[in-house]
Image (cartoon, rainbow, N blue to C red; front, side, top):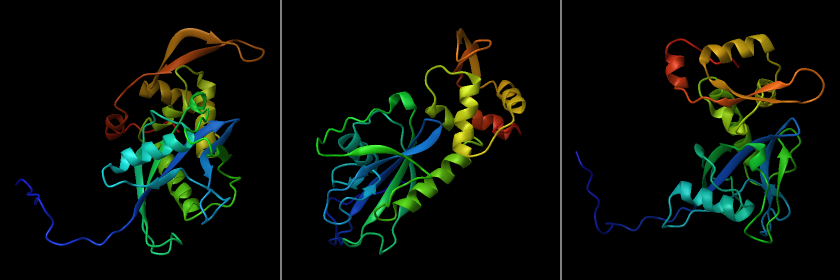
Length: 235
């Protein structure tokens, strides 16, 4: 049955401001970090918060999130996944505001910040050394981190943190940083081979003494389908 949309609303709906906030993680200096911006508004002035802002009447939620992210940080062309809707009546001291949060991962080589707003201040913060945050953004970061760690078990989301090529050692270290635990090297590589997630490029990389490490690249596969067949994540 096709839905019918009236040309004019029968009643005037009460205004309810909606914002979008984005939790973007990266791994730099062997540390999981999150992107924050310093607030200039009167409320929470000088505190740090997630990139975000109000949604205009003529744009979608995702378009608003991408626009706000670009304006505050200069970060573009990033895949956003809708995370959760935060609607506690007291979450914003300015009044009743609902926020739709998004989460994304970004490789370290795509992390230089060049805000379009020249007055904006943005930087990466280690997730375990965060400054005082505005609103309920600590909760947003916590929910986002839990989502990312969970999705490592059945998707290839973690590869968004990698460059075009990488060594298996680098890949394992990235996953260990996100999961905040050590992984068994032999089991990690054995399961990677079983899942056929990566392939060698034919090139090597010399990182310190010893034998050069083989560079790999991500091989696109249907990870969820493999999971349904009873094959689980190596992580």
